[in-house]
Length: 454
Image 1 (cartoon, one colour):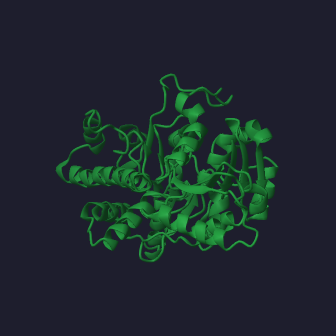
Image 2 (image 1 turned 180 degrees about the horizontal axis):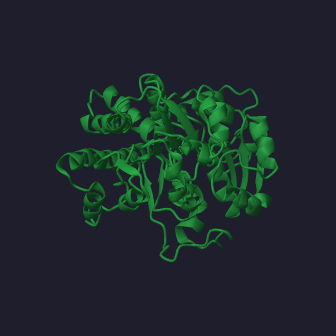
Image 3 (image 1 turned 30 degrees about the vertical axis):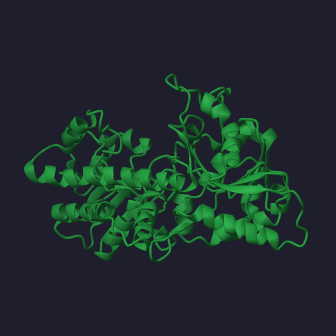
């Protein structure tokens, strides 16, 4: 099939490259010429494991351009994957979505095109985009005859750092439209993934337990709500684990054992029960905020979702409080932070806990040292006011340090020779912000081990 993808961020790029790998003819549109040039050269503008390898394997079916006129005509499916940042009131800012829809309408010329909202958009956006498309199309002076189109929703459930596997071997695929023909087109598009009939990438073999992928084919509003409901539930689960972690610290319980005991209950499951400094990234914060904003439009309150956000915000403050409990005075103390990206295997800094922790420590007069194995390049661009605190080496983070905080559980940090660094510190306080280090081992090495929940 002929596919157009608008936007080459995490979602758009992963979608476009994966569909091209499956054999579809894909053209990706981005208005950033520098990014397009980079992608044409086989280089990925974001850090995502395996993406450049997949780019190479899919190259014969993949084109990058800044031109809607080059990409949209003749397309069977147009994915709109532009950014939808939060506005001040928590609702998504849809200006980029509007511009994309208006631009797509100017180039539609196929007998039937499915325009798919791939961006995370509020419930009702499908109808809104449909109205924009039809208004813009009618206003065209060169409007061709016999052109039909319909809007669908196809929410993504990608984990940054695991985006390719989540696309090719997903838990489920959700498609929603009030037009049956649109659902048929998307069903055909995804049939190789649904049936798992494609030859896997050389670097990412099919999991042994991979079976046919469930397809949820539903109406437009339900598909839109599924995305928000799923992300909000995962955010709730993390925040619940963190709240129980604070209680565990008070009563002398081990939160890692409590989480393990809970997770073995098949009704609950172990994923997203890991306590720590809380969730970040582009999804959970934005989507929970948008869900609350959408509910308010219908005079509904969402106290559970609000509580999840409050608990998550508090975890970052608790990390600083733990340091203050240990050091008594933060002013003038040197404190190192290991990890800046919101999670491992990505350079995404959006809503990263490290940013709040660093700013809070600086506001209290501490001297911070920051390190990340991948995200420093993006950090210098997006956080110029904090760039002066970056350390090029891990040794520099530990040297003469009063405390070190493991903020992001990069494999590089977990595999450190921790015995090498304890002697470099002024006071060997180690705050495990993710509950991933062996507390007994760290204590044997000479660290004063502290956990966020405990």
